[in-house]
Length: 382
Image (spheres, rainbow, N blue to C red):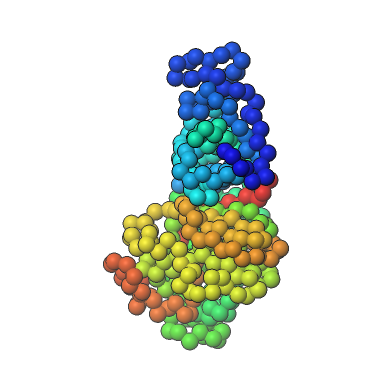
């Protein structure tokens, strides 16, 4: 490709001179450097300004690899290749967009090494990214798969237990018994509080509503914290309205990253950040993600994988590997701990009996409502 913007382009280690379909290879092309048939019999240039980003997240059996070439050529075919003992094998192909980017999703990267090759066209040679793997780009810093029947010591703890005035929620408090384990997942539940002493405690804390609830909230506060990287979780949210489930990142300086918050079927999902106490996006309507998708009731019956990638300059949210929101706003150089919660806020109680009807078949909520979390993981840049 001509006119590379400041790129250093170099020849790949060998000149491929064979066509695999006919096995007509010359002796000077060792198997470890052979290529798929679509890029044979030509020089492959390595574009040092091109980038192949390999996500470490397993998105419901699909991966995410994003190739960006320094010279954008919209419509040019790009082939994702995996290194094997015999050489480079084709995984899938796609076409560059106007920014020279193409996404690949048909394989979970695991420990494999990949490259992306932009095919020869209009007299230009094929051009490859440098080799890349998830291990080169990411370090797994935290993982919880909730396979036991209790929170893992040293990783998780309960948060704000039996506190009725936490974060403006006077009519609900987290309780340890609201956190359970089943089917290899942690189960975070909302139930109605029936004990008169607890109801009286809530009223004394300022609860003005008739009903009082038990919530669930766990966190890594004091146990694990992270400045930047990728957070991902596999979650099945409750359908009921009047409460919300979430997995999010909390700091001590009025900044947080709400990877995903679910307000139930008929309302939807949101992803936002808070910086110095200010929410972004500022418009409440702009906080919702995949609004059309979540009007399908069957979608709520399944697990989905949510992730957020963040540094000090931008935040990218994904649902099942697809970008659901980008926020180009600087975030502070601070440390975050992880929170997973299922909360009923005072201002949401009205939705128990009078739910928002933005989807077919919305009904009043019956309790308990449970959010299931299969796993939560964090990776930091390698």
